[in-house]
Image 1 (cartoon, one colour):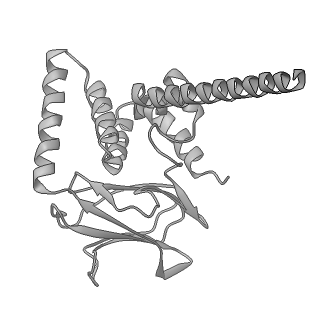
Image 2: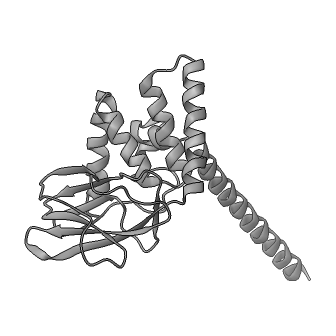
Length: 234
């Protein structure tokens, strides 16, 4: 009888311990989610609130970059999911030796636009025919060692006209708020970066932050560190 009672007490302690661990785990997960909601892309980039300790921006499941050989893609990222872009002239960001870039309509055979080879950090703005709302496109990335075969083929779509207009209205509201609050141009661009990232338009966020780097030495320096981390091999 004494052994049975002792066994019951032991099992009860084990259950309580398991429940406590589960509760602590849930609290930790909740705190992590709250951190992602509280801090934006710019906070991560500048290390505000300790967010820079992570290689990935808030909300990203994995580091968005990927590399094959000497080429690391940052925007658009590598992955199985189709990516959406708001701006009809996106910026493509890579690090390493590239043999060139080309944009195709998704089932097209001839490129709409090409960009020459580059080495180091390449932030190239699309300068071809305006990309049309609702259309799907393919970015092909070439290596200088294999100029006839794309190292990467990454598809993305421009959002619909309705979505473009909705985002434009949101951005106009941000601008009006910035004027009312006597905000700096740099501060407004930071808000645009965070807005795009939170809405899931990651290519647009990277486009905006490269623009911000031209007027902010802090952002420019932080970006260099971010590119290094995102492109480092595990």
